Image (cartoon, rainbow over all chains, first blue to last red; front, side, top):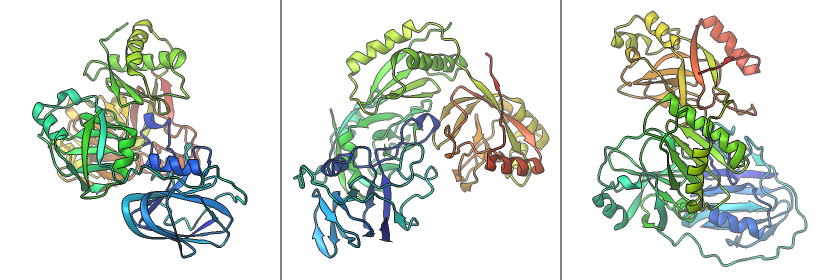
Length: 279
Length: 245
């Protein structure tokens, strides 16, 4: 078991997501920054999909009850293993009794902790990703402990790696969304020739952007939306749907973020700058 | 058989959006369901693809592949023209019990007087209709129902409630439906349904599918309490019949 001594601001269990229930209105969920997570799960040679901890802003303190191997990635945070600092994108062995403590967030917004073999929490509808009310708990806060399988021997093929991090990037590569053609020249200019900042309203469901573009009065019938869909509201506000985003919507879907762009945005917080670049 | 002019658009690299004319029409919904059945039976592996129907659109998602849209677009148009009349799309009519007791129907009186109806008349009209499920989205198990009669079109609440209880039956504009979980909401609450619309303990967590029909049946407070317990222990059988167009 992994004992949760402190849970951190918002720490959740996430895997690659919950599929095949979107036609019943169930969001996909899953890790926000799939790029960073794919690197640490490869370092641990985990067979996908395995569940990791997604650590938002401030991290937890965790005590291991069995030997295993871990790797961290995503946001840069001050992390210690038994008071010794450890780094992202490197495999560490942990022994029963070891304590992992998260400190200050230095860069980015979401850190990830992967264990060899993954977190072994209960699967609901084919996924361990926490999303209320599908899973009983919305985060690890009230869970006390998390199950995982002991691993005594593991020789990683690669034990550390230099990563072209998403943290320094702010340009989001996008495709035209289904309603892209509704955009006026003025709106296009506003979209592609300036920066936007992330609004305070940003979470796993959606990121709102502070700067509106010209308003529109287009109405459409409700239709499917995807993680990474950029919606334009009648008042000109831009909303980027993320992994817990609703599966359908009635606002024009003007842009669609690439997978990498979703990972880049997942590491942004209120006030951070981003821009859109059409692929 | 109806054949429509469909359009096919790229939607990112993992999805394709197929659109029918921009109308709320039974015949369009029926055609979409037929096309899904055809694709599942003959063209697209259900293990790889997700099919999301909604009003006049069908979104096809393949999470593990980067789709080649230049190949897929003509293919989908071809498949649509080849599909012909697809038989055997089973659609159900579900009869859901609703208690319109004042304890649950928080806005029943207000909505009735707004519409110039007695509460009894409103309940009768609300339960006479078979509503079509045009979409499931917004929340797990939330149905977008079509078919609210003109006489029942009532404005949304000026101030949304911060918390509407799970099971509450709402009425607003051209829409009626059931809140599948506690959530904020601005619809007029006229009753409550004891049967959960979404249950993660079930293999199929939401018994309703897009294209089905919903009828409401008025029940007493005592029946509500009984059905609620029955639903919790899993012995409440929801009334269903096959809908034959």
